Amino acid sequence: MVVKINENYLLLKSSYIFAEIAQRVNKYQEENPKAEIIRMGIGDVTKPLPPAVLEEFKNAVDEMGKPETFRGYGPEQGYSFLIHKIIENDYLPWGIELSEDEVFVSDGAKCDTGNIQEIFGLDNVVAVTDPVYPVYVETNVMAGRTGPIDSEGRYERLVYLPCTAENDFVPELPTQPVDLIYLCLPNNPTGTTLNHEQMAKWVNYARENKSIILFDAAYEAYIQEDDIPHSIYEIEGAREVAIEFRSFSKNAGFTGTRCAYTVVPKELKAHDNEGNLHLVNPLWNRRQTTKFNGVSYPIQRAAEAVYTPEGQSQINEYITYYMENARIIRESLEKIGLNVYGGVNSPYIWIKTPEGMDSWDFFDLLLNKAHVVGTPGVGFGPSGEDYLRITAFNTLENTKKAMERISELSF
Ligand SMILES: *Cc1c(COP(=O)(O)O)cnc(C)c1O
Image (cartoon, rainbow, N blue to C red):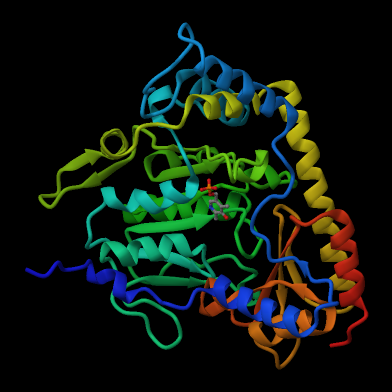
């Protein structure tokens, strides 16, 4: 007998963008040991856990060490104390009512956005924006919902919705029927977002076409402008067509600690092969209770502390810090005539490459001439070819230094 692999894995594009970036940066550093390289490609927060969070984290660790307060397996869906705070703080202020069994606490929005496709049939047609957070695409490739990738980097059977400067990074409604639609807003990597009216168009489309929107709101905390929905459920009818993913990673520094949650409303339904309707919520519950054993107790206590007044003011301070970096990046680059997008409601700035340069050319130019590292847009999809992503997650000092260096270049 010879064990067979899941051949879908062979369809995955092999060269990974971040490995290529690391290789180019390391090579440059070896050849130019004195160059002080500033990394602006970071897709990770850099501020430590807020003190209020850390304190509850530690207290809960101590509880685990005493027989009276020790906890073993918790509810797979998350502790009620955390779910209650989530509903009360993240939804009620926007007029959204959720019941506790519509919220599923997890160890990450990456896992949840990656795993959610499991509860849907393999013959569904999947739509993604282009550029895109690669997790949505690659988990569907692994599952067998696509064909092979073409020379431009598009998988067969996936529907790509281009988001470029030409359409102001607002995806247009698909021209062919699609079943599952991944939307990430505020967007990684473009940093742009949709207002209420633009989002309502998508909700209405999903209602009319019986599609489901998989809404990744990992960057919700960065929203600054008034007309941007903080949850897709602010849009009328969204409870019937949308699953929402949230995370403590980017607002509260949980990237290494791991806590997130997913909302699956009770109104959400999908068909079986005979055309009978089924609720989606119990399917996700079944999936999670079978394959997941919950987030650790101290981490859920740490996440709960995000919602205390101290926690809120500490995370707001961090977000203000990152958004100040974003402003500096945006304004510095605009000043030297570059076309930049995002950075207003998100920590990502999406830069159009100067005339005649593709994303790797521009990456090399910034590395060689300014010792600044960005992320080539093409790593997020073929429509990212003429763009480069810079993030606001470095320190203020480094951000200013990087912008001064880039400002001395001419394009
Ligand atoms: C960072 C990020 C997340 C968060 O993932 P976690 O697993 O919760 O850390 C989710 N979606 C996108 C698009 C992200 O950039």
